Amino acid sequence: MGRSSRREGLLFLAGCLLWLGAAARAQDAYDCFISKDLLDHAGLTLVWQNALPIRAGEKLDTMQLLNERLYVRSDRNYAWSLDRNNGKVVFSRAIAPAGFPILGWTAFEDRLICVLDNRIVELDVNTGIEKHAIDLKLSVVAPPARNSQFFYIGASDRRLHAFRAKDMVEIFQVAAENDSLVTSVLADEQTVVFGTDAGNLIGITANGPRKLWEFKAVRGIAGPVIRDGNSFIFAAKDMSVYKVDVNEPAMLDLAWKFQAEGIPDRPPLVTRDIVYQYAPSRGLGAINKQSGRAAWALREGNDLLAEAGGKAYVITKQKTLAVMDNTSGRRLFWVNFAPVANHAANTVDAKIYVADAQGHIACLTPAR
Image (cartoon, rainbow, N blue to C red; front, side):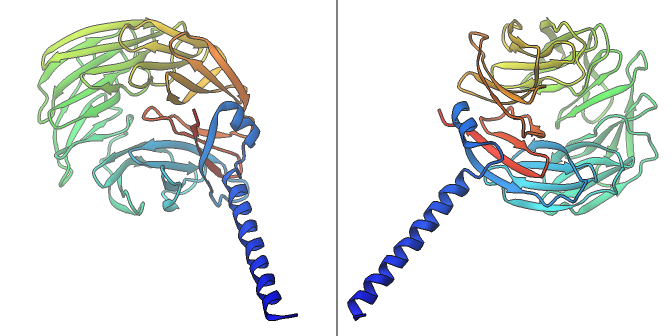
């Protein structure tokens, strides 16, 4: 074989290898545990996928979006932090022995805050390493909140305790007049807001127990209260969703009260225009955030995945993806999402985060 023939053969081989590499990359782009046909039918594209190394018998328990991270925790208390934009693992580590209860998972500056075995624990947001932990000798009943000066802890003694963050010395405590149990706490540098199991929503000054305002729902508040600008949105056990506006430091208005036709067991999910509320007997419903009127209700709806272009992407109890039109209230279509075993609710943008039982995490986004 001549030199020219050998060169042509090598060029041909190199071209084949490049083609095979491109084909493999193209295949990888669709290597999702949900088939490409189903994604195409739903108008979704795969942004990234990552396979977490879960052990035999281990299951993914929770998925939560917090700032630019996706936090995944297994039923053995092993946690992964992923960059939600590209799926790369930021850290992975056991954060507690298997079986230990974990309460809350919030961020403040460079720390993640949670309650592990009744200890207030701060983890480094970039490594997951425990930076600070203290047992306050309280039975903590609500996820803690903090600002630059204080931790605010709801305890079983029906008090909200404020501890100085730098040394965890208790500075003050406060309670509702009806001595009800604190179930939800929010804090910024000026104000602390807490809800109770009797339906109280109380705002106090952040540096002392001076009451600014109070609202009373008919029955107890179900889960965390959501702050939306100068408004507070929450579900209550009187089968209602409330939106309360704080117009001045001491002026409070009930913007609307929506009858949910079921007792909520989760907090609402709040986007720019819609409040989504789940109730076991009613499914998932959408409420116009400004008017407080129903946009739609889907009895088989289980949770919001994401929202895009006036459409809500909903995971159902039957493991399907239903796409709802928030303007007309109609269900546009649905597709089979049977492989999905876990998900994160996203109220920030259009990205959808789902996982299968084998630990594959996928980020999807609407293609149109």
